[in-house]
Length: 147
Image (cartoon, rainbow, N blue to C red; front, side, top):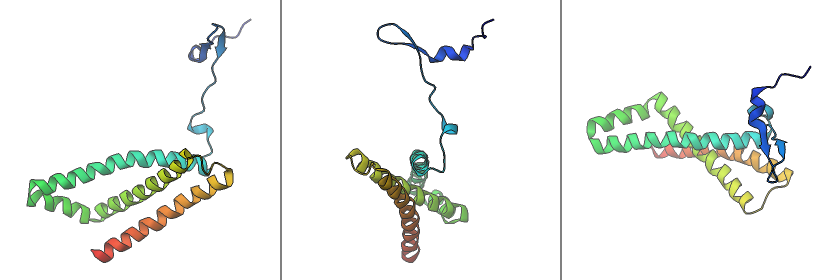
């Protein structure tokens, strides 16, 4: 007796240029990756911080629109950004900005063909995390002193 055909397998059947049938490989998803491996973690966080930057721009647009709308709207925005939640959001945006910038610089080095050996990949990954923490704290120290 033959095994029943799984209809999901139809998605993985393809043809070569000569017309012969081949079985396409199933691409691994997030479950297949070790999230604690620095290469996977930095890559996924770089994508997440890119999306978070898009949300951060909405806060900037809100603040600029409030600035243009008048004193009442601006005071509302300033009250939010001065609250505990607002400061927490701004701190998160700062961390996102530094992480995405440093990871982007790392990718630029890769685009130039530099830093592909594993020791360098691991070292630059750690440098991105350490740099993000240090530059975020430094930014806030400077901001609070100047504030």
